[in-house]
Image 1 (cartoon, helix red, strand yellow):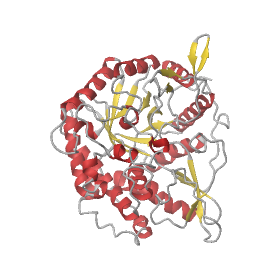
Image 2 (cartoon, one colour):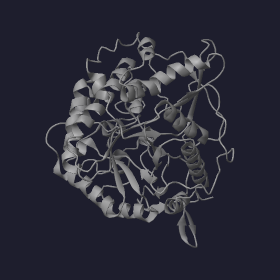
Image 3 (tube, rainbow, N blue to C red):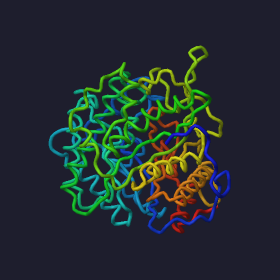
Image 4 (cartoon, helix red, strand yellow):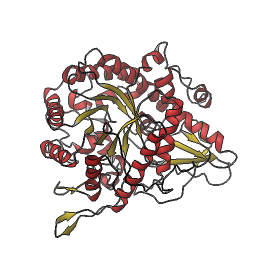
Length: 485
């Protein structure tokens, strides 16, 4: 996951613009979404408020005052959206379940209307030959649990296990892959450290406490699910592992510190059963980690059938000289506080473009590097790209063939990153599939509706869906398993 120099390009075009590459028939092509970003219906059918409802309704937290109240209105347009997935030929669909739609306060009996909605979604996918990949938590913690301390409260991890058991009893015969958490790094560090995400707290000790309780929740949830499922599904977690490069003489030390906080604090307990010792040393002035109790790491260390990998860009670091203005180009929305507790002397440097609309550098070599590094460190661990995609400024144009969105940049982005994935597989990586982010334009968290990641365009006034050129390109890839030009 780390590097101090840029990687050497693999065989093929140095710009990763290959074509004609053939993926195995078993390779699982799909797309991904998250509940709060697309569903809407925020107060319907018994759904309780989540931390993102509270956060987005707090003035100044989200650009333009946008909220997920309506989002892409997927809740009311389920059948039509399922048909869109069919039109693309998707083999899999990765979606998240809103915890507060199942348990409005995060505890207690299940809300039947919520179960019914996700039952219709899962059954609709299966009827169309699309495998359901369920993410049980994509950042939308029930507000009632946050009022009790949220992920800084150990009890939240046990509440999550109870929620997992409800899902296992209801859907344990139909789900292809159970993913416990999406990007716990973001939940912990952006939610409790920098304040850029809900619940908006800014305390380094709380962020590190949340890291552990999220890890614990993952282990407890798998323990709760396994006795309940009956169809031999895969068990998974998705991490946004950082590809970190160092600059200059101080680069290696900066890489080590950020790798500990970004990657190894999750990979260690999840895949080896132990936290990295250096993260304790680096953060000893912030917390003593006394919230780790005997037996916790054994609970966290559950066998994973597949490790989900989200990749968008790379990170460039060095140690700050303490004199010049400290650069903070870490790719995350800057609201004043840091998502890097204990690493206050690390400087995040801007990288060469081109960039997406998020300001993230485009570097497909980073995806190849990440997948190969994971394979080399954990050679028996199957992987799946669970998110990869790009935000660009898209416009609907009227043509003689009807409305079109000519998103040339996104199509090129996907082509280059699928090339990177293929090269990693050629180097021995056991990569099982690739879920493009995102199926449709949606509520992009703190950026509201200002950033469009979808391969399907959503008009937020009319909610009309228009497949973009990237969707047509992707459909051709899915149909042929061969990378189009």
